[in-house]
Image (cartoon, rainbow, N blue to C red; front, side, top):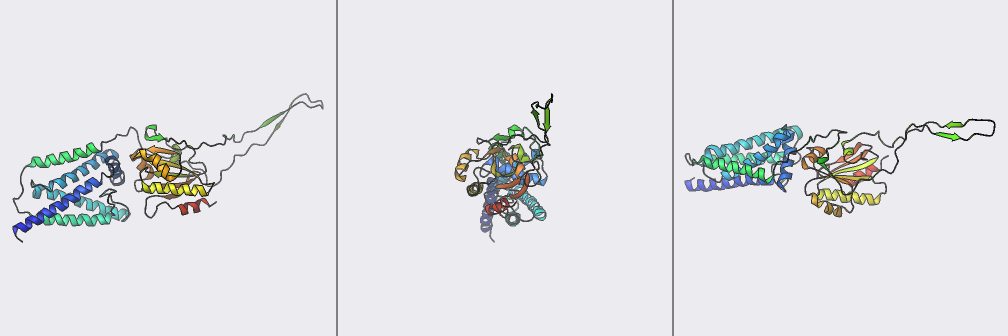
Length: 372
């Protein structure tokens, strides 16, 4: 292979790998930087054991490093001595992480390598990274010794500028309080925004359990000079139908969430799958007068689309708005939207999540509601 051919192939390889890295970085910030990066933190970094305080910096630094490596592969300074080895090292780390993920949880879900723009399973991402490493090794062999230029300032400037740009696009929003959700723990006011549609208020007055009632009787005519008092038996507390009542975290959002049958939904206002699920439940509600009250917890992403969400759903429902990080904690790092839970006296009877095997099924919900 002559020198000109090697040079042309090296240009193609550099352009291809650079494109993959830049696409990966941009995809991790789609559709909006803060939402996408916060999701990357909660679903990828926190499950690895990184604290939230570290994850917010690590996520932005990793994405910035991907941008920097993509750009640096297109320039000649320290290309063979630093840039290519650093790129291979980062890919090897990703491969090891993905293999651990597959070993621990199987090959399901989106690995997050290209964010939500191009969903990939962990195994698909492993294949992609292995091929990319092979291309980089080939590129390393094609480049002649001594081909590097030696302006280290280019490397540091590109890296610093790339990382800084990510921090500017998605500024860190410091949480003013702990967002760990414990059953029964009150949700701080700054973490949840009240809905415009107020939750339904129970129409039943508070019961006075085990209280004795007394009735005063007027004096009779048979020479009795004092009032007779008739005492009835204690009133027994009414036992609610269904399973024994339990306290859930959802009662911190909706006061009556643990009373009777309720549907709790965790939605993103702009998510078309969430809108479809809400519309399906509206249709079920029209067919059954006993359909449980639907209460929604929205993620604070495109919250301005909530009126549009209800227009599509065909009805308005009580709702709360929760910040992105707190929303993922409530739903679960290993789960996805739309999330739907059927509760009976605070007991989770049935749960659906995501858009794959466990996605919301209106027929399954109807079947559960018909059980006594």
